[in-house]
Length: 294
Image: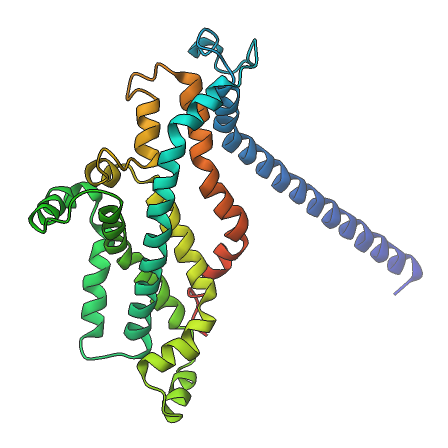
């Protein structure tokens, strides 16, 4: 092979590498562009909420939705906070215990159904999963009759019970999938050492369940915090949670107080936002940890 042929081959290889490198940069640029566009689309409602929350009643008009306030007025925030503060406390009294209790029950169910199996475990698991596909509206009347016949009453304690029961199917599914990835040899070793079911759960399984607990707590916290239908039916007039109070602040479907309702919506979203900021980096990892066995 001549020197000219070798040089031509080297030049062609260099050009191909440059083209490939250039293509990679274009691909990366398109990815960033897509991310920026997606972020802008997501933030558009946040922008509308934010600017409208500082508008007065005359300025908060649908024709001026995209415009900045003519006069920045923070009174909407003060009024929204005064109306929502007691309900935010009620919501915290609801979501914290209901999330923790449903997570613990789901963890125990998942452990028994995956590592301490019994005859008919698959049937029981299937029946539990049916609860995931029952919409709130389908169980509202039967649940109301059960609560009234049991003389439980209405209030935060009733909402805690309802959300714990309704959260057991999804929490059981998440924990069962996660525990399926735990080697059976680890459970057998604890049995050989004389540990029973509860000792194995508390000493071996529970300490390595943090990723799934993070996923379940975030899921249950968000679900209970954003619930409106259960809260409306079972919360009672003296124990309004934040979603019911926010609906009242917005005057139902009339939506006369645009600025106050927008400020209230932003205030009501802060707790869930803080939870995702604090635990969000563990959420995806914990959610995917049970998706692949090995």
